[in-house]
Image (cartoon, rainbow, N blue to C red; front, side, top):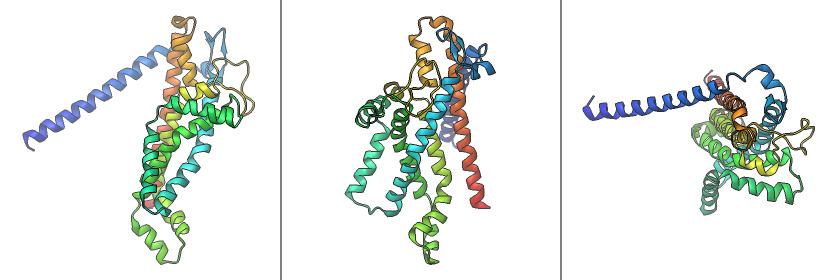
Length: 281
């Protein structure tokens, strides 16, 4: 190994180590700040006394329902769009513009999606300030990520997978369904769950379309307002009338939110590994 290679590897190792230490220090700071509050009661009870007592169950439930709605509204459309772009669309100026637009939408700030959600779902479609409007808005937010990840996963499947099925008399859709999609599933699942992880932690889109700081009861339908962990954390950290008193609750809420995102990421890793093992079985 030359001196230049050693310097390069050392620099990369040092950067990686510094990043790991930074993440570990941040997690330690957050978890230790909320350790005194974390308990089963904290996860299963509703807030009381102006959010200074009780737990975060309504916010936890609202985040779960919101994530489900986001997945239902974005994943089928995103995967279908990726299949069309990769398998059916003819390359040309229009398709290149479509792909460029999708890439650009991935970089649009989330607050813009929130304002768009207010105009489209809350007012134009008359869904009101509701969990449905928030879920559809977050679905739009994650749609570019889902399309891009699915498209790249489909492109990575060897051409022989398609040609082999077509040579045996299968239609194009049958070849996609039986050969291409199973091979692309690990990449698609990873992109989908990473997109949902981002959606679970967003505040701005739901701030305009349905979230509330405190509600007397749990939502009973898709037309109700709801509580969510990111907005709950935002209020506790910046807008509460007694920030010092609720700071441990804010740290504990942040710990739960990080844990939720970690579970989603671990789920993506497990599903990807399982799908790959099935392909090679």
